[in-house]
Image (cartoon, rainbow, N blue to C red; front, side, top):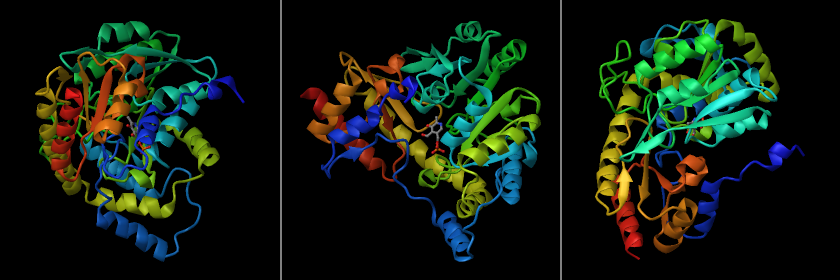
Length: 395
Ligand SMILES: Cc1ncc(COP(=O)(O)O)c(C=O)c1O
């Protein structure tokens, strides 16, 4: 087997979850998903599709009607994007892998801003690329980008700059001026930007930067996106997912927005990876998009309550540093004197039945931190979780 594959790290979140196996009383906040199932109107569309017998292979780039619907949805949030720049994929993670397969090969330099969801650093490494990380830095519990350091790290030798904002796990979000500076710099160096914007709708600050956005409570609230400022021919690929804003983690449906010249290659890569997303899953996605402007703001309002239930309670615990995340669905925090996040996360499961993700799962820059997914149907679970954390820290 290739050495790079042998050297891939096993999931540290899984390692913590394994420490809780067999315990029914664990309050689990370790994975990046809500405990709320996909809404019925979306599930019904898949059931109806299956009942019609839509069980066959389909277009590589997705059903034309889904690509049209995604084009309309994107155009309501950002600059217009025609359907022929959209590729439907079998999940956000597959979208990101396909983008990376298209852009980075053995020895190519890929710069990744970290801490980040580990798949993003693993994918270019699997392809043999040289992954160079640029760390955000914590300040009063919030994670900040040193823009000058990032621009210095991206040179004309950099093939791809990989950014995830709103960020999993830190909640860090790129500002519009930062995006503009990064885009201008990457135009100069000839670097591709791969922007993982799967959390763009899970955004709690007024989105005054996006055209037509009415603020976080509006139907189209959205984090600043590279799609607001880039031209169609820019070296930009944006990855998206139905998982988070449509509560569809288990369905495996995502999409890419890419320049027109890349679409043929993406079609071939999809053919060789998965061939197509299942039609009944795409029908479910279409049903979700039809009601996105009503469903997503309501979901974000619920997540807002969750965030505002959890973060102040965490902040009130002695020794805890945490900032209120502008986007995403995670509280990322650390406890003074606790530097081994894996050991602490395992202890929390074993001693008090609290399931959190260790910062170490998101790279060395996040060691000592813990990630808490606050997407929960019942915010009282979060209150109970904080009580368990408090009890453990007293032990
Ligand atoms: C930052 C980030 N990008 C992409 C994904 C991929 O989502 P999915 O593969 O479920 O579409 C996730 C899921 O956790 C994520 O956190």
